[in-house]
Image (tube, rainbow, N blue to C red; front, top):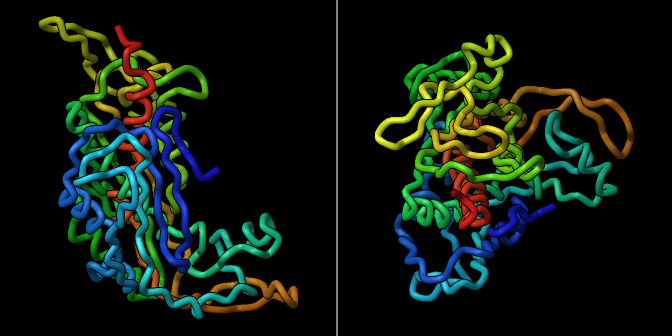
Length: 336
């Protein structure tokens, strides 16, 4: 499935080493003035080759909008954008040897050996450039509605904190120097989301957001609010006391992460995501040759992030913006 959403439909296309990647966003209301400088600022946050902490691959990541905008104002038609690929090293990828913990082997089975393995093909983090372009548009509409989406890195390897600290950067650089990689954790906080946004059962807000967030390459863990810590609590500690002040209803704590029963409760929506270490590393690894069906030892070639977390931050924010705006547009008019 390459399309997400009910009221706001988001489609992604392209491959890592193909002509380019792109997106179609269908359902964004007409008449919205788009700040293209803000869009490009978001794209720059995710772009590769911007620091010693990222891959050496360099892409401008400038989206070319081919429909849905006139003079940077939405027309109500589907918004389509293409982002060209220009710095591919496809000869670094051997289709006969699947890289451990990549999609290579599973995709070879699923698609009868016809999958594009160059740079990960359809499964590459390169496609998240299209996510950020779509999310930047959705963010601007959310901001007009008083909704903010902000994220921060809270852990890299064994180092923790409230931002990308010196020790976290050292974890990344040490991993790169040893031909290895490292994972990390990010926290996303969404404020201003009205109560009652979401749905029942499979249409619940957590379910919908989780579908988007787990589609981001490298995400292996997700929790809302206190998450797994709730399993260690008594109900008396886990429950969020409900209060009212000057006509405003709120909860004293936010262990639920702003969502109850699949519906937003008016408190900040808090999500934390765990990213695995980048599976492409410089060390020798064990795999097989799919042609000869023999065991082999090999080294992954190409240019890869020693840690995908710093560049994943704007991607998670984009996913949250897309998912929240879709849910808000669908639920609009049904509250109260």
